[in-house]
Length: 160
Image 1 (cartoon, helix red, strand yellow):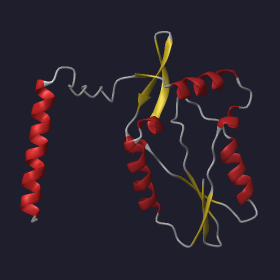
Image 2: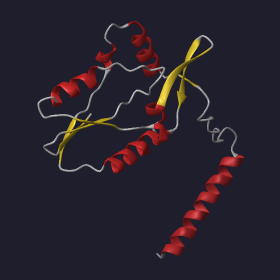
Image 3: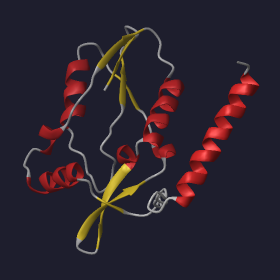
């Protein structure tokens, strides 16, 4: 089967499926919601927001990931990859705001994602990572994803 034959067959099947969907009641595809409008919080977001209001140590809900890499790191490539992930998952770029009496999620642009870079000594690396992991999120001011790249003079890089 040639590529043109396969393409024609697929186009015919898609056209038939679209025609069937238009004629069958109740099978319309829902319209995509406005991605820029405030959205209700998911159950997990609501729990995280609630706990951040009343917990003495909101960092207990953090899920840190620390990677130790060796050799030079292309920071621009890493930042581009992070922005691609954040573009696909709006929860990673959302802050919590109040809309009337209810908290809502407001997604920001993926381009707002930054990568904090710090040069630390090998002796200070563990303390720098611990401080970054323990720092609480301000859910009304920053998305629940933090990116930090700690470089050591020994040319190894830790990313948390």
